[in-house]
Length: 314
Image 1 (tube, rainbow, N blue to C red):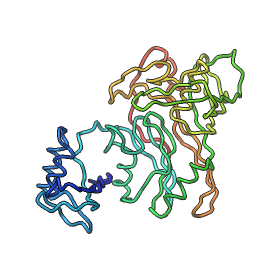
Image 2 (cartoon, rainbow, N blue to C red):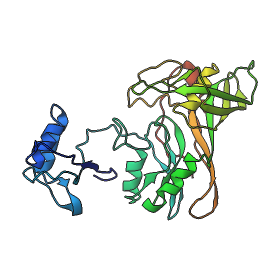
Image 3 (cartoon, helix red, strand yellow):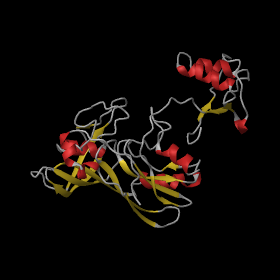
Image 4 (cartoon, rainbow, N blue to C red):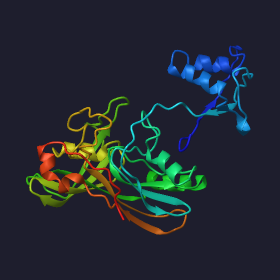
C-alpha cells in the first residue's frame, strides 16, 4: 500500500507442534478478532510474503523464526483537507510545514491520513522516515530523513537535544503574570489516558515561556521546550491558568468529531535550528503558517468558526 510500511511478523517457536502450517498459526494468533478473517483473505489473495518476496499460502509449513510481511486492510479514513508544504528538500533531509489535524506518522486510527504516508507517495520517497514527531493537533515544522542510512543521525539530534525548537501559542493575556519565566515540573502520562498531568516529584519537564505580543485580551507566547515530555507545552500553559486556545484536552477533555476542523489548537512549531549531522550545514527553518485566532479573534470569542483548507507558505 502506497506510503504505508508493511507489518513484519516473526514466527515464534513451536515446541509442541501446535501449528502444522502457516494458516493454522495465523488463525490462532488472530482468533476472536477481525484480524482472523482479514488474514485469511490476505493469504488467499497472495498478499502475505516471506523472505525474498516469496508469496506464502495457508498450507505452507510453519517455520519458527521465519519472517513474513503483509499490508493490513485499512478502514476508510476521513481526508484531512489541508496541504503539507515542503520547506526544504535535499538528498538527505526533508523539512515540511504540517497542517493542524494531520498526524505525523501512522498511529491508532490515523494510518493513511498522515504526513509520512502522504509524502512518501506524493514525493516518491518510499524510504522516508521521521526524525521526530509532532502531535496531530499541532501545526508546524517536521523533519524527515530521506535515506535509511541517515535516519539514525537525524533522530540522534533530537535524542541529544541538539535541535533548537521554538513554538508559538495563543492564549488569554494575564497582566498579573510576569514573563519571561521558566516552568519546571514533573509530567506523567498514563497509557490509555488522553491527558498528561503534573505530579509531585523531581522535575522532568522544562519550558521557557515568553510574552511575544498582546492584542486585547489575547496574547501570543513564544515557547521554548528544553525537554520533550508528551503534551509538555500544553500542560505547562494550562498549569499557569493560560490554556492554549482550541485545546480539546486541557483544561478539560472534550470530544470533537474527527472531521471537525473549526477550532484548531492554537499551537505552532515555528522554528527548527541545528547543524546538519550529515552535511555539516547550519540550518534554521521557520514555519510560514499563522495561527487563526490571532486574525479572527472575535470569531473565536463568539464560538467556533470554519477553517478554510489552504496551502500555507510561498
